[in-house]
Length: 430
Image 1 (cartoon, rainbow, N blue to C red):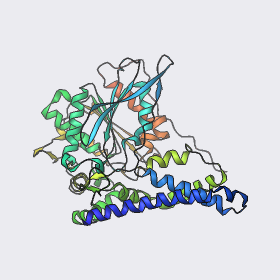
Image 2: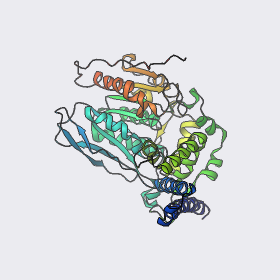
Image 3: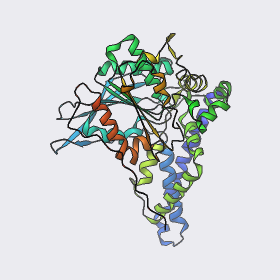
Image 4: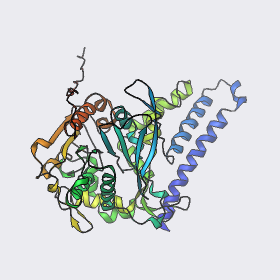
């Protein structure tokens, strides 16, 4: 019961703050107070509104919100989310565009399972949909998965990816972002040995920890400092009685969120202070920049304890992927078995989560792949999120990735001109 008590304590704190924010907002907005000129009343109402919204978002899965896409005919085409493969721990979801013929590009976006929902890739999906058919791995919140569904660790994750690729077929192009990069590499190597015809045509690996020792970050330093016993005692909790997964051992999303915020506490504190002031002045809105960002950022999900612990131990501490000794079902997965899948590495120059070099290490493991099928790109000035959701993605990386996909498709598109990297304009200081 010890682990359940701590889980329910965190949920109680969150629930209390949500209630407190709503109560303060309601109290400070009481009509009688409109006769008062005291500036503290609108400030109280603003604080309550921001607080209530923030704590409520922590347990709500965001909506994809992709309603339509403009087709080549200039018309809007409605977009449906279709579950192609349904599994206990995650689904394969297609963004099906109505009244549009199948596209030549078939892209599987492998979303991270690192505390946030797959909707973190919303802007990435939306930017690819006009030019490709897009599928995404939609991982489930572990708190909502009954204990009867069994375990889910890094080996299970790898097999899920392999099964999704079997479902989509060999004309698929994979884009893996952050956490799944080493396991997508392992899944492809697994297919190379077990089911070669199911391998994708290309892998685009973006900002992932293939070799955490290649470049130190705060994340890798943390993994090196703590022991597995310390992690299990301090990070693992048992889902409380409020959710379907009651009794399941998890790494709670709320605990992960606390870690995220602590890494940039001053910046987040300033952002919320500014938002409260905007609310008090009547300048904020439901869909302003602050709410769009934090509605997604604050929405966190629990990971199964075995997935979290096996990731830290096998990927970060033991470096099983980096040393090419990773095994699935007791059978070693040889990355060198990949001989025909083109691989492109994308890194951000200022990535402080998976620093440049960690993802690039994948190319050294691909000993059986010709150099002509290897590519790399280091985006100047880009941070971790910028490489898949920011200006760097929109202006530089997305065109380069589409060119890479076209160059390694069954029917390349010669009419598309190669993209050129856009150099940011720098203003001279006065």
